[in-house]
Amino acid sequence: MHAKIFSATTVGIEAHGVEVEVDLSYGMLQFFIVGLPDTAIKESRQRIQTALKNSGIRLPERKITVNLAPADLKKEGTLFDLPIAIGILCAAKLVSLTPEFSSETLFIGELSLDGTIRSIKGALAIAFDAQTLGKKRLIVPKDNAHEAALIEQLEVIGVSSLVELIAYLRNETPIAPTQSAYQLPLHNENELDFSQVRGQHQAKRALQISAAGRHNILFIGPPGSGKTMLAKRLPTIMPPLSFQEVLETTKIYSISGKLAQQKLITQRPFRNPHHTISQAGLVGGGSFPQPGEISLTHHGILFLDELTEFKRTTLEVLRQPLENKTVCISRANHTITFPANFLLIVALNPCPCGFLGDTKRQCHCSKNAIEHYLAKLSGPLLDRIDLQINVASLDYDTLKNNDARALSSEQLFTGVQRALEAQQNRFGNSFTFNSSMTPNQIDQFCMLSPEAEQLVKQAFERLHLSMRGYHKILKVARTIADLEHAKQIQVAHVREAIMYRSLDQALEKMRS
Ligand SMILES: [Zn+2]
Image (cartoon, rainbow, N blue to C red; front, top):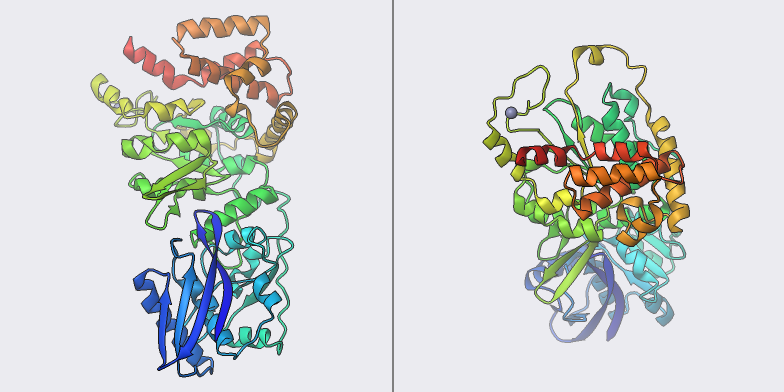
């Protein structure tokens, strides 16, 4: 007596098919599973046997052998409980499936001892690849049905217990396929708004430029100047996630088991890991590699406050993801890639005590101490940051008075939209931004007026700019021009872009 059931598991963000073969042969009731790690097998056997018993199923006195193939695929145990249980029922002729139904259907789910079916990690990733695996139907834990139903043209059957599933497979009780309840968000559901931030006009302006051209940004300012408050509001001036982006981001949360029940990721993630975070926590890792903070921030904003407190080695690993928008995690015999397309905001105090340049409080740091402090900034990381902004501490009057000039998120977003349109026309798609222009594209698209050309030349010499620094000024100037739909980059655009190199200028002063 033999049965074969199809299941799948995730490796990185991809699904791989797994065949669950069950064989019943004469002999005492014994239960063998091959193809899983040893520790998982023991627990799996226990759960499956008890769940079947508590669902009113008496297993025949047979030797049960389960094989999970391919054997060389690394598998995590629990999501195979359900396919193994169904395989046993089929082999024992307690449930009979047509060959067509079997071959079209993927089963995934963890069993509890009482026979209820518990949610698993990665249901969306498996649903996403189900058609590639040649399947039309996915039988999943009910708590995972809403995420799996994001995938169109896949029949998603959500089940909450083994008893319910058996009745469905025996055609006794039908279960309607789960329909996706997802609707594209029309606007930002964020309660935060830039109108809540008093003063800080320059920082807000820089964030508008950042959102428009996807430029990474660095804030320098004393404690309490509102750097975190500003950073948190960046998502409110970015366009809502597209369906494709919702899918990609939700998939990562699904794989990490961080998808709260019945919730999809429909807003751009904003994450601010503490400076004590490990390298694996930040970029991903583990023996079954899990996405790190930078992947959980896919299509959103990663905010690293107190940048100089992070371990230098932790920051170094951000280099490659910032360049490629993905992160590769190498294991002995394979490499796993997770998406990591995020906008980076970093913040730091201007000196160890925090008050350098403050108008009201005195900085007592020595020149040496300040140099040592700033030297901790990773060069390669700084290279990926286009905008450097000084955020001053606010004085009492600004805090107390109602700030009539405080622009709202909606007002700032109008400019962003203009710039996004200009970039879409320029690059022919909505996935390329000014910040990722290649040197050739910079030559092609950053046309300067003669006066602007002259100003860039002066800055190049005065600030001892590297080629990279020079390109950054042009890219940022391009975005500033796009905010007002200007075809050609003018002097004012370049002048503003140069202003956003304040740290370079400070470091330069220190060296001379
Ligand atoms: Zn100081």
